Every structure is written in C-alpha cells, then in structure tokens.
View 1 (cartoon, rainbow, N blue to C red):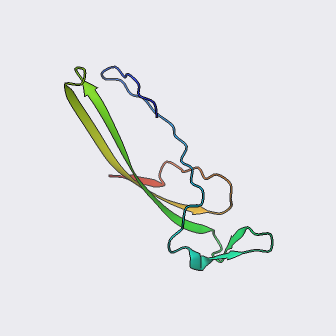
View 2: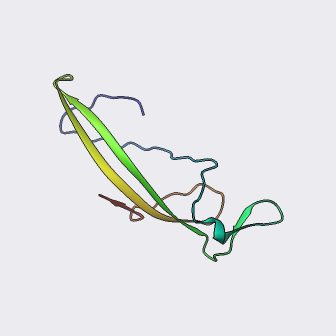
View 3: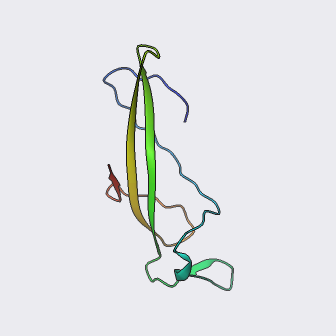
Length: 97
C-alpha cells in the first residue's frame, strides 16, 4: 500500500486483495482428494473450512516525524472454500481484536 496524507478527524476505507498461490494447507490434506481432471475435491459436503488469521499494522506521523503513532489489529476470519473461484467475506465472517 502506498503512503498517503490524511487530515485530522477524517476517515478512509482502504480495500485490498489478498492472494495466495501454492500456500500449504496444514491439517487440511486428510479431507482433500484429486478428481480425474486434476482439481482437488473435498470429502466434506459443504467445502473446505479454513481459518484465516492475519494482523494489520498502521503507523502515523504527527507533527512531522516528531511523534509516531502505531495501531495494531488482529483479524480472524472463518470461511469455507467451495470452488476455485475467489472468495468474498461477509461483514460478520471476521472478528477483530
């Protein structure tokens, strides 16, 4: 993400795209099988359940670089992958701490 200036008492929503390729799914291998066309199938009827956890860190400069403020959030999202299409999370799928 690029750096940007934000005036006091203002809000900004930033949208990002999180993408992973060839990321190992530790513990999920037992529920996966490969079909005849080489695409993984799930033995679970509803899809493959995943727990996505990540941290968000932001830093702001007040009065130039004289005072630095930092904010950290931990995000945990529960989702189920049903196909190889991109997954969009609903508003209540994640918890923030």
